[in-house]
Structures are given as structure tokens and as C-alpha cells.
Image (cartoon, rainbow, N blue to C red; front, side, top):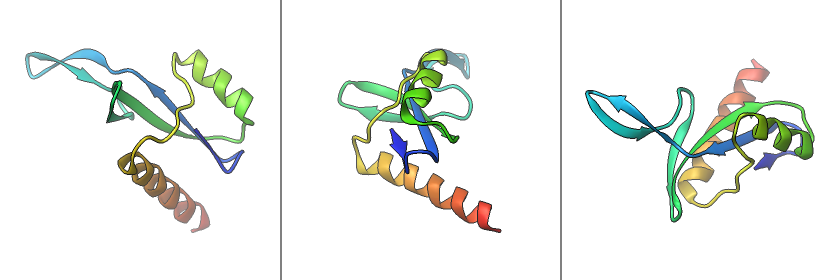
Length: 92
């Protein structure tokens, strides 16, 4: 998903199996947040960039990811909180 057309990019990808506490579990890479959707679990990460949507989509593809949409209030609040934190950090 692309917010404000040139401010923030969100990537999504599927989690991978990782060994956690001697068990194998689905886990997102470091810095990524997992979200449960009807089609499975997805990992999302926010990037602060100044790319138009078509370039952001190409950058996502290089990371084996894509620009997602928002499917739940939980995802929306995560994105909103990241946005608020970033905006208040920049202004200080």
C-alpha cells in the first residue's frame, strides 16, 4: 500500500519457518510485523521513501515482496501508529 503517494511504502511477504526455542514456527524476518488474514499469515514492513508507486512496487519485488492493501483495523492501526511516530520524530 502506498500512503501520501510519496511518503511511505509498505511491503508484505509470507512468513518462513524458523527454529524458535527448539521448535519450528512461522516467523517474520527481523523488523517485520505478522498479521493473520483469511488467506494466511503475512509479514509487513514500513519503509520511508520518496518513490512513486510503480518504483515502490519494483523495489518490493526485488525483496520478494509486494505492496499490500489494508484488510483489518489491526493493520490500519499498526500503519497509523508507525505514521504518527515517524511524523512526530521528524518534526522534533
